[in-house]
Image 1 (cartoon, helix red, strand yellow):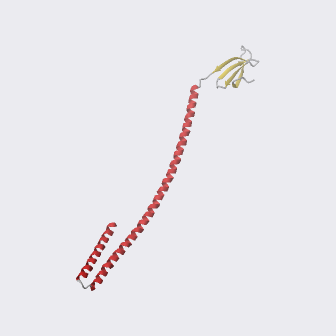
Image 2 (spheres, one colour):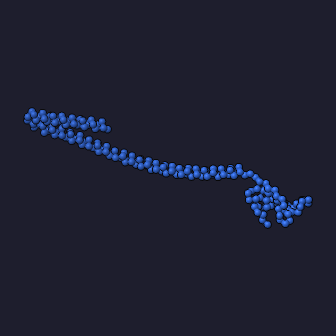
Length: 174
């Protein structure tokens, strides 16, 4: 027969000859305590010795262990999320760096093109000023008046000054 509150019973022993008839049974209760019971021939417990253990400290340590485990799991989840965010930011930085390098290459190429165009414009202006000065020299050879020759000479000097200023600006700009 099952005894109330008894989880299991083992090791039934016959009693010593001087003991009343029955068996000695080792039991463990639902609370985790151990007990020795003397059960007579009719199955009635005639003697009981319970060994109770105070497990308060063990339960407290177990509770602390569970709380620590939960904190570790939460911290692990936070660290995993932070690691994921770092990897995401790293990928964004790599993409931004790649974009910057592409932009720099495009700007460098564009600058080289503009320098070539500026050099071409400089040569054209220089050639046009030289041609203008030469035309003034040729056209002025038929000038009869002193005022016309002075005007031609003044225009040539102004054109030479513009050519000199243009050349100086071009060279300092490089």
